[in-house]
Amino acid sequence: MNSNTDRLAAAFAKAAPRAALIPYVTAGDPSMEATAPLMHAMVEAGVDVIELGVPFSDPMADGPVIQRAGLRAINRGVGLTQVLGMVAQFRRDNTSTPVVLMGYANPIERMGQAEFARAAGQAGVDGVLVVDYPPEEMGEFAVMLESAGIAPIFLLAPTSTEERIKKVAKIARGYVYYVSLKGVTGAGNIDVDAVAQRLSEIRQHVSLPVGVGFGIRDADSAKRLGQVADAVVIGSKLIETMEAAVAAADQGGASAENGLSGADVAAIKAAKDWLSGVRQALG
Image (cartoon, rainbow, N blue to C red; front, top):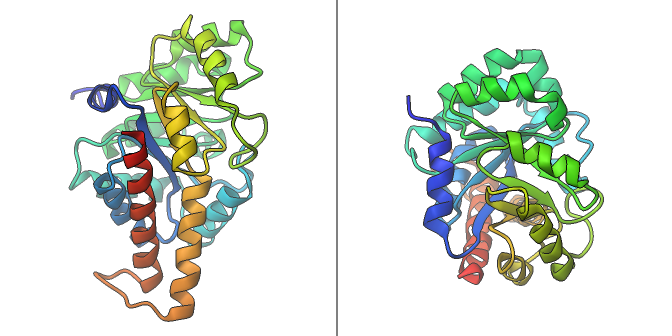
């Protein structure tokens, strides 16, 4: 079996010299049925990699927007097994766009690290970012992931020490995700000059592409960050855009299509349109 991480390398190579566009959505939101169609719509909008959030009841790094999405998904019965099923469904029609799972250790521990690595590789997952698995605790699990053709991906923050950056550089594959702000997802405004300085320091040790996320609110901020980063990661604003579309569809009685509710259809269209604008701004 070819390594799924090949898809990540190919996606970044294809995007260059512009920054890759990586949207984050929560699996199971706006619905379980809509997740794979939403992923396909995002690809049509020009995204390069998809980060799919695994719903978890205690998401320490997520701001209120992503917390709401996770709670909605949990209330629909979405867990790790269902998330892997959504990836497999997406893979039936798309074998080229990388999918990275982003979440927390608890669901993986419950499934078992070895079983998760096997099942995720079989489903077509390309990378895994576990917020609460620091590199010091990832050694054995990282080997399991790589054996399944999956890239272990890590967060770096404004507070990350040079020692931590070096540790991540040794074990990370695919790309590294730089958190541009102190705090949770969706918070604050980004200082592009400060990000550029930090990326320069990170690249002294990390040869992988470095994506930047947390706090990108519009096409303009994505464009400005895209001039210094290898990728821009957008989650909270995208989910807010879908939330607004769902609310409007519920009020207006939007029509269902292809087995999806009117709210699902509206959310997918809103996401596609918004991401198309961001993709255009990136060049």
